[in-house]
Image (tube, rainbow over all chains, first blue to last red; front, side, top):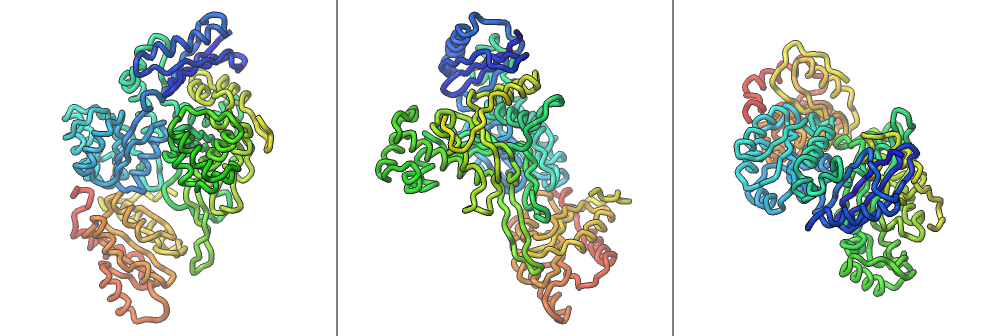
Length: 467
Length: 152
């Protein structure tokens, strides 16, 4: 039996999945506490011991791959020129690389901006600005501003190619590690974030893993390939695209309503699904990730209530407003709370529904009618997800919900919000065994096994079914 | 679409587009192709372009000139404050052209031109202006300047 070991160093738990590469089955699952801040080996030992109990010993693994969101995840700052252009392209690249954005800047960095960046102590800065052959003085100015600071982290440079040499030289002269890669926005009609994503991932593997204390367990795995959100995005991409020998599931969406944020991943071109529609704005990434920092089931439960309205949450949960208000305050006070009684399950479901509806509305594009002298014209902003056939929910809030189908259903298009280009008639599924990250990690080494594994264990839901 | 390779490339970058809620793209497309053929780097924004998008594109691409088309008679409303927006974005001395069917009805061209020059456009082009004529003026106006990319 040829097995692969997939490790996720999370902020709370170290999770393990042992997969049978021949059959695409889960051989064993286990978890231990996350102990990255003290000694990562303690938590990993506990998890490995649990795994060995299931497997009857520790076998030789063909692959031992890991991802990590421990120690704050991959904390990044992005810098671009125009807010809606290179600064936005930089954000897309960093989010696609699985980063947690701690700040995003546009135009010339001021002394206060630089001080704030240094204070945030990011793991990587992504420095962009100017299309190829376009503006070069702003990105060069920003490079000198960062060079003159006490910033200690590596800088990935993905700017106007004509300015890149000067930018790298300015940073290197000040002793900063500067890594040049292709421009994220070589022309206004061309978004090219894959090279920047690869460069960020490379810096993460070679430098950040060590800085996060994970390399103390280096003998126990082959590589920490990427941040966990990037592994989930890669898993989603594998499911959508398939492999040369496996037919993919086509355009899909993955939603993760987490404790602090709600992440949405969409795989698909997002071109207009109806003819004659005019696209507006930056080109959209094929694999797009958005992170809603104000929608979290625990740390940001109060923010969900603020965004959706506490009256709506209480009505959805079927409890009085005062009860919902107190319960949400309690969730914030003790973020480890798990629902026990029916009222708590109902409140969690209402919070998850609100988080998913708002996060999907922000992630999906819009199509509105503009009235011109020549008649009405439809203008699309963002991605058209109307034809997405599969919406996958992941994370504890959905896996442990009593009726996940009724929660996920709000991700679909809504007649009350006709401008939003959300999926019209998708099927819904739950990543019940938390395998998307594992499939993403294994996508390069054993794509067919990874695809089979993720496909076989997707739990397809029918509306109204209870888990 | 791929532009035909220019005989001689110029170092100048131009932004083109049709301003406001105007969908007339054909003339603007022909103009953009002619400009590319003449060796300019053309950033073509197409139809239905808000004033702010011209300026954002010009900042990011370090453009030397913005060529605004308007065909549906609302040009005067759409172009109001265009130069001020440029100044606000740091494009104080960018060359600004406007052309097309700029106003509704039969109005004396001299009046129309004066209104657009007062708005801060460097040149306004009457309906029916031939492309070679506009190219010659653009060439002369730009020859008096250093390319933006070289000034940075």
